[in-house]
Image (tube, rainbow, N blue to C red; front, side, top):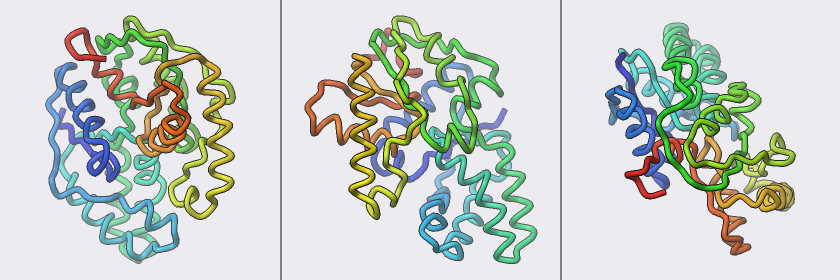
Length: 246
């Protein structure tokens, strides 16, 4: 199987360890992973802020960058959600039927990491070791757009040494929402306060999720509280072994 990593903007620019962990994990499972250097932003932030026409070149570049791969894997429910639910529509509204068809075909072989592991590779035990108390925040796009369901939990439950504790009101948004956190700062902060209270109430030392954007938001709040709880992407936990410091 020819696999490509779609890193996403946040991973590429701010959280490269998440991308490295994704590759390390898939390598450990016996799969080579390419990183097409032509890849850029998927265009989600353009569409979500009303600049749909500006996203068309990004969709076209994305389709070209990942042509020929059997599977495209991204450590982000948000970006995979945008690829599946926006790309073909963006091209159609621009009047480019060929691009729309290509975008839809590419979307059908684009996967969020937990989907790829469970549904495509058919594994839940990835050989990980992470001896910590962990709670999991299901991000909005992975929960509501992709409907990844219990896949992340099944993966975490199979990690040796990990104590998985349920997050109260887990399905509530953390308050990030991309530019929502900037345009509606007070509401975002109130939503984050609720999320932090629930995270800290679990007694977990690590809060995990499948999107670096939400983790960035939650970690900002935890850091300001000096709570002693850290955030870690699902990929980083699953890539951990006894040979890799946890």
